[in-house]
Length: 75
Image 1 (cartoon, rainbow, N blue to C red):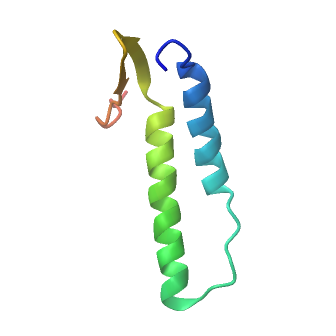
Image 2 (image 1 turned 120 degrees about the horizontal axis):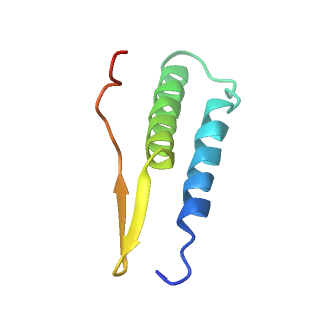
């Protein structure tokens, strides 16, 4: 699998997934179900966006994703 993995294409798919979650239509639900749906959408977006922003490398068959979670530097 490592020989055929296109890392940039994979990261692009995660960017597309994050964008899809951000523009996902809200189903006709209300109350607690609505809150659960919105909370799950936020988590889905966060997960997809983090992976999409990762710096990826493939070394000796090991895929490494580096995600900088530090707050942006002021300036």
